[in-house]
Image 1 (spheres, rainbow, N blue to C red):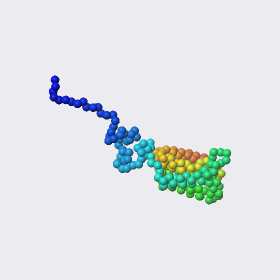
Image 2 (cartoon, rainbow, N blue to C red):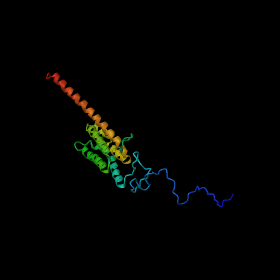
Image 3 (cartoon, helix red, strand yellow):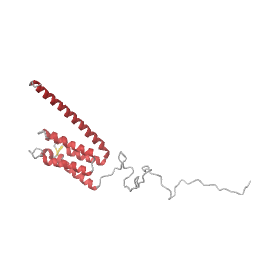
Image 4 (cartoon, rainbow, N blue to C red):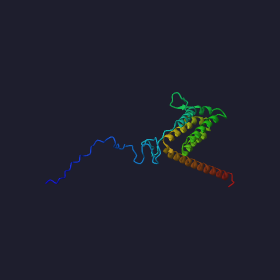
Length: 216
């Protein structure tokens, strides 16, 4: 029965999006952070997918920092790995060779090694990493002070190369500071136990000598 009202069918929505509709979100997009700003609304050039394991932006060092690191790398190579030893895969630098000079041999290489650590601190290496660098130098100085054996150890230990590699690694992965902290703690524990045993042994030896001599 006609009622006088006619309804036109509503066409289904089109599957194709027009030019004014929003594009689907990328799989790298962050729901809380725009591609061009951080959570506080500040502009940022860091891609949302370019982050370290802690979720912080993994920003490459600027040109000035890269130049300073390259300079430290050249110094460390000169000291530790300038020349390849024929027939082996080992390299040596000026450090063990200059160390053979009596009295003043270790002074210039020690100054260069300290400069590497000081420059790493100025660049912004974590404190635990700086402490680990200092431990590398301490091991080099203690063992390197042994005549002849120390120079051979310098040729194998390569403290300066180790320190520059540490700096480069921490600039790329700041979260590695935890490993440096554990290494420093473990080294400190080993030193403490060693000093404790050496002190106990020295005290026992003195007590024995006093007993043999009839003093006690």
